[in-house]
Length: 625
Picture 1 (cartoon, rainbow, N blue to C red):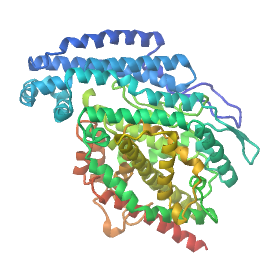
Picture 2 (picture 1 turned 180 degrees about the vertical axis):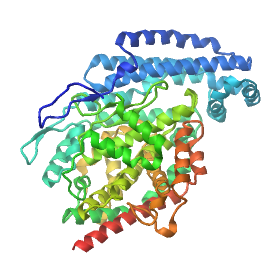
Picture 3 (picture 1 turned 60 degrees about the vertical axis):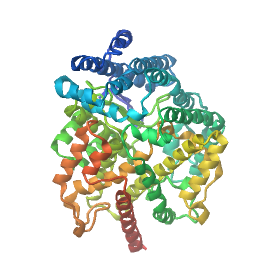
Picture 4 (picture 1 turned 45 degrees about the vertical axis):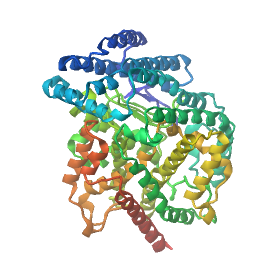
């Protein structure tokens, strides 16, 4: 791993571990040269306009040129994106990302003729070409996917106009990112220990889980007061973002922005609505969890700032080497090949690990460069949550590696609908690995509580966000302007319902209702719901992968009589989903594996697992009483 120093004094923060972007371009000059080359190449693609129906050979030449250009453009963009996220205060890096974004927009505009032209040529002719020309095999799935969208594809001129607005439509997200990572003046607070903390996003995530309740309240009050000062501005950015979705959906004759968003990955809208309905139907289990949380924290009342500390205190910290060792051990049910690939990834310069001023908050995996490895950004603090985040992001990375092994560039990229299953399955396997070992009641309660909190955060919280996002779009479709004040009012009502505030389950302070402004995923079109569908799918996959434990070991294993077919078939199905990449429609692929996310069954199974976890926790508590 690349580090910025070779040694640190005792007690000091660990030396930064950085990704090696020289593996993409060895200098900025090399990046600029490639960008200039691609600017000319994008312009040259116009020579194929009006010619896609000439012959199978011309169609093959055109699609090869387009995908080859796109593959190289992605390299240019990813390098600029990652460099910018190392320190968002560096204006030159932000400008380079903007330049790369404009070049991608130019590519979209230059190739906007493809869909309408293929549709004019017609399915019959295109199918003959696909049969006649072997070089078209790598393009076949994407070509047929275009033909599927015939009712929603516009004229060449209209497609070019929409493609030309790409950079503008990304404006709200860029404004949000810059404002909230570099321009917003985050407050400094003094904790009960006397420690002064600048409450940026990374420190908010760290200190909101403090064991000291007064500190949690201080963190919430100070952090959300700062965000409230920007609610009007962020309300406008989100309003603009949502209106762009509505505009494009209407332009393409979709029934709604939701329909348009799900049409791309070919996910039935019933999946989204079934998910929201299932979460609301299972709110009693969430409220049961809040009652258990209040009991375990020894509180007379439960407030919104009480939902983050672990149910059982743990002073345990994990250095990066230990976290990687746990990830390797937990991945054992996925087979030797998977574990070997994971170990090789850990040995490479793939990660930017620790927080630093100006660095992008949160965590992500970026694996879009086809002929290179994935890159992972973390903000690792050594807590158990950081271990689960590492496992989560490496689940994405291994998905990417496996998909690239089995697919050409054209079908190597996968959609979020399967992407999050790959990451969340790894989280569940980590939980099961830790709980399969002999542990004290206290240790067991800590990991059980963490598993329970994972269901709250990944299922119920994400569905709450999904319901909020759907409501925003439906309001915009009805002509309503989404001001910061209105969004806060809408968000407060939703939080109160999910958390049982009107039934006395959890007390909620309206001062925190600006939380909607903090959620970056609202700038990704109908994205968050897939975390919730994925934890349901991941739970079923994990049960199959751990079929040998079906007699009752682990977090949520079924009773012996419910034992599934064993981990061999489960592993084959799971790895088949990962290796498929984007060569199949994700919903159909999962359904063939027995996981239909348009039905209640996966969500009911997840909540049954949740209730089993709570049963076990309550049994331990009752035994200790």
